[in-house]
Amino acid sequence: MKAVLLAEKADAYLRELCLHIPGRSVGSKGNQAATDFFANAVAPFGFETESPMFECIEWASDGVSLEAGSASFEAFASPYSLGCRISAPLVVVSTVGELETAEVAGRIILLRGDIAKEQLMPKNFPFYNPDSHKRIIQLLEAKKPSAIIAATSRDPEMVGALYPFPLIEDGDFDIPSVYMTEEEGVRLAACSGGETSLESKASRIPARACNVIASKGIASKGSNLSRRVVLFAHIDAKHGTPGALDNASGVVVLLLLARLLENYSGTLGVEIVALNGEDYYSSPGEQQYLAINAGRFAEIALGVNLDGVGYRLGDTAYSMYDCPPAIADTIHALFSKREGMVEGQPWYQGDHGLFLMNQTPALALTSERLAELLAEVIHTPQDSIDMVNTTKLVEVAVALRDLVMLLDR
Ligand SMILES: [Zn+2]
Image 1 (cartoon, rainbow, N blue to C red):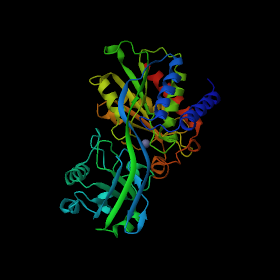
Image 2: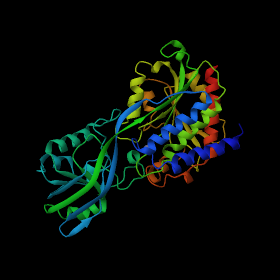
Image 3: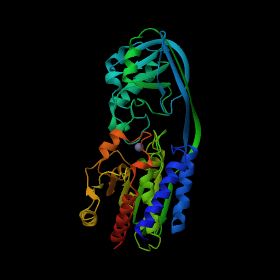
């Protein structure tokens, strides 16, 4: 298929995922529409598809009102938080030491400064959870404030370009919480000790969602013949963002690749996976994939993750993890001479972590200017299709098709 036709397809896929489907946060109608779209789009190219379901929550918010003294303040409900309607005295806390000694039971607590500098990992997040975060969560649960207000600054590594960012984003944490800018935090801190009224209209709705696993050429699951290459792109997006680079573009590459592999008949199995949960607090799709493949990661010759590819500026960056020399040489030989591809720094905040934790060779593809994207675009409404150059998505899909063919030899 000519590159120009593939670019047209890429454009149509991208528009479907980012414009026609209204939001792809896990558990939402748009998320279900996106996984249905993916499954229906790969099937005609001879892939067998499975869409294993999991339970999750959809979350809805209808605004926050916050008053202290005679002033009102702007705040936002923390994603997945419960709602509340509370009047109580305000306690201000800036460090873990202060939290250890503060009397906060039944009060509204404002967390700002040092204690609020990093987004706290969700309680049940399976892959990474530092003790310093766990300590703050444990203290809050033990001390039982009636609600939490967090004044936050910037944390691009963990939350992208979002400012302010929600300190807590956790459907398993049951103290209602909201967040605000540092500047609002300074104003509110001046009301310390005073009666404060907080109403957050937020609710958790039980929902279901699925991964989509499309496979071809996997002779017999569980046998030695199921040696395969696995290619991931997460299909979910954060609330409130079209998620074009994060990560509709990666999903589009998988759809183009499925098309390019229509006539593939190799002995190396190919598994193309729309993972559902990279941007959700408990990574449910990732956990499901781990459970389905428990004890079977040794069958995976190479795991490939696509996240943040196709930014209109800069090249596509590839990075390798635990690749044996034969595979690393193949990848280098193929990619290093391609126009538009460069070897980039390793990075670890992506779904290739699933391969790494299972000692499986991995390849990750993103944009060379990932740091800039994280600081300015990712997880904001700016992450729109204007950011994406679909020609680059075609280049990546063709490069991956060529890689699959070489690995099959
Ligand atoms: Zn993301």
